[in-house]
Amino acid sequence: MFCRRRYIMLSVATLLLVSAPSVPLPLSAAAAEADWELPFTGDVPRMDIVTVDSAPVTSRTDYVAAQLMLHGAGTLPDVTDSILIRGRGNTSWRAYPKKSYRLKLAHKQQLFGTVENRHYVLVANYIDPTLTVNAAALKAARMAGSAFAGHAAPVELYLNGEYLGSYLLTEKIRVGQGSVDIDRESGVLLELDVNFDEPQRFISSHYYLPVMVHYPEDKAQASLGTSIAQRWNAFEEAVREEGDLTAHVDTAALVRYLFIYDLFCNNEVAHPKSIYCSYAAPSGLLTFGPVWDFDWSCGYLGERYFDLPFLEPFEQGQWFAVTPVADYVGGASAYNGYPFFDNLMHHPQVLPAYARFCYNTLSQGFLERLLAYIDDYAVFLSPSAEHDAERWQRESTGQPVDSLKEWLSLRADELLTRSHDILVTTAMAETPQTTQSSQTIFVTSKIYIRNGKKYLIK
Image (spheres, rainbow, N blue to C red):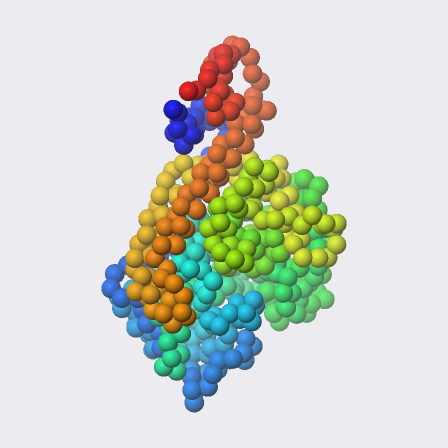
C-alpha cells in the first residue's frame, strides 16, 4: 500500500518541475530572533499581586493600583514592581468565573528574553481543558514567521493572597516595542470585532465588517476614520472583485497569518472577533497580525474541544472550519467574517501562495516541532494544571493534551493534502501537456502521468 503522506512527500520534486513555484516565503531574521524559548526547567513561575487596601479587581475599565512580585523560578526573571491592574475580555469576563487581567507595570521589564515592555496580559484559559491551545498557537505563529507574534509563559497567579489558578502570561496587543512595532506617529492598528467598542469605528462597505481603529486613540474620528475607511473599503473591493491585492495588503504576511488560523480552525474569523492588522504608515500596505484569541478553536464551538467532525468542511471545499451563515445577504449581521475570509483565501493572488507556503511548511517538519513543543509545555505545566483543576473543580488536564496533538496531526494532514492538490491543479492549468513531455503530473493520489503515459499507484 502506498502511504498518502509518503506519496505527498515523494511528489513534491516532480510537482516543482510542473508548477515552477516562486521561492518559498522566507522566515525573516526578526521573526527568527523573536522566538524566545521557555527553559522548561524547575517550577512554574509564581505571580503575587497585592492591591492597595486589598481592593478587588471588578472592572474592565478602571485600574486598581497594586504591587507585583514575580518569582520566575529560573524561567522568567524575578520582578518586583508597582503596577496597575484591571479586568479584560468580553465573553470570558462576563460568562466565566475565572477572569483574565491586564497589567501595566511602572517600569519596562524584559520578561520574554526579547524587548522590554510595560504592558502584559494574564489569559485565564478557562474553557481550554489543556491550558495549552493559546500557547501552542502563539508558538506556531512565531515558528511560521507571522507578523508581531507574541510569547507565552504559564504562571501561578495569587491575587491578594487568593490562588486564582494557572494563567498564560503574554504581551498586550498594542503599538510599540514588544507588540506591534510600527511607527507611533504614522502607524495605525485596526481590530475587526463585533463588540465594536472603540470610539473610532466603522462598518465596511462590501462585507459589512465591524472595523475599529485600535490605535491611535487621540486623533479625531472624522479625519482618521474617514481615510482609513476609504483604504479598507478599497481593499475589500479588491477581495470581492478578485482585483489586484498587491496595492493593498502584504500578501506574504497574510498567508502566514491565514496558515495559523487555518491549522487551528480558529472560529473567531466567522464573527469576526480579535482580528488585528495594521498600516505601518498612511501609504503602507496592510499587514495582518498578530494572531490572537484561540479559545474557540480546535473543534470548539461552545461544547467541547477536539471534535473531529469539524475537519469535515474540507470535503465541502471550505478552508476555515466554520459554519457559514445560510441566510447571509450582505447586511450588517453576525458572522460576516466568514464570507470575507473565504473570499480572501480563494483570491487568485492568495490561494496559490497560501498553498505553496502551507505545503512547504508542513512538509519540512513544522508539525513535528510544534508537537514537541506541546509535549514539553504540557509536562512543565502539569503541576500548575493540577492546581488549576482543583481550584476550579474540573477534571485533570493530562489526557486532553494527547487529544490536542491528535487533532492537530489530522488537521495538518488535511492541509497538506489540500495544498498539494491545489498546487497540482495550478500546475496542470499553467503547463501545456503533450505526449513528448518528460514531466510528471500527479492527477490524483493514485494516478500520475509521465511522458504521456498513465500510471496507477498501488
